[in-house]
Amino acid sequence: MTVVGFTRPTQRIKDSMDEARAMGLDVMAAPSLEILPGDDEEFKRLEESVTDGCVVVFGSSTAVEQCQKFFGDRIGQVFQGAKIVSIGPATTKKLEAAGFSVDAVPEDYSSYGLVDLLKDEAAGRRVVIVRSDSGSDVLSDGLRAAGADLVSIASYKLKEVGMCPALLHLLLAVKRRQLDVMAFSSPMSASSFIRHVEEHFGKERGDEYLRQIKIAAIGKPTSERLESLGFKPDIVPEKTTFHDMLQAIKDAFPEQ
Image (cartoon, rainbow, N blue to C red):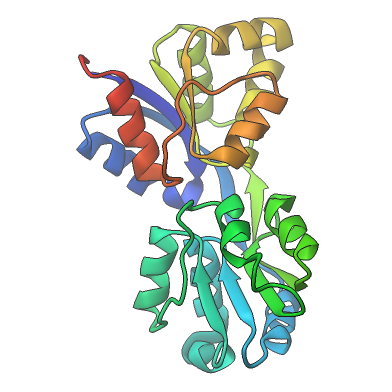
């Protein structure tokens, strides 16, 4: 059985492990990030920024959840008259469960896909991005270049989780080649884990251990972060979802 290691936000790790095991993968996982609510001022700024006919882009299902928690029953009223854009299937599912009709989803479930989707209609138009405080600049830079009147809202914060028994177990599994693949689902998680490896074992030895196993990245932004750190991913799915990354890993090890 293929053994995959990954780090996930604390609030997502159990569901992610269950999904991987249901797909027939053996799993070693550790928390990497903790999801914290955004500041009240950000949600107030969000409400003030939404205008009739504007575009609101939800960059993750967590962004939707945090808006639900803050606005409660008023959430529909807050976004009334806006074009609702979702980054991908999980976010769309969360939006629809909250009572929204999603107007558009990019073919490529990533910041790059969102830029391609919106660039032709962005000029002079208010575009509100709802995401984490750690989102890449790809989306904001791309939409500004297309002429959008851009507002970026940090609806939640991502805080790195320090060393813990599960993370130490995962680091040792990398050293001992007990993993077939180490999978990364965000640029921040990739940076955090590689830093932990290099701090624990030393940069030269830690990088050597990581190069003994395959590296998977959920999509282009994560791939770019890994490459900037010296690691070219071996596995990248066509669609930027956690499920598709797991499936790509399974496909890469058909006999295990």
